[in-house]
Length: 101
Image (cartoon, rainbow, N blue to C red; front, top):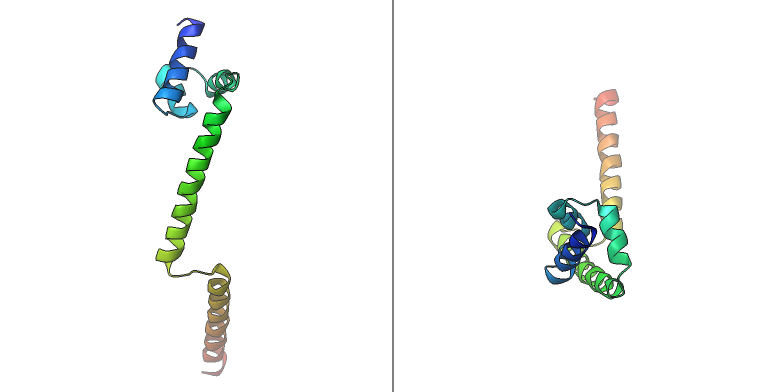
């Protein structure tokens, strides 16, 4: 494979088809390091990478909020303190049963 062939193919897969570097590497058989170095040398790579990063941030934030709502525990400190208190209560009950019951 010609050096320019895989570079052109990598650019096409990244910018036109929206593939990530790992996917491109698997498709064209070139290391992720080589693909990353080539894409980083392109002037229009940074804006596209920033755009994708922001899009993923929104997705991560949405997923994190969804997990908080569906888990039933909105504040992690409350859950941790509740679990800790329940644990000490259970230990106290078991200790009394074992030694005094």
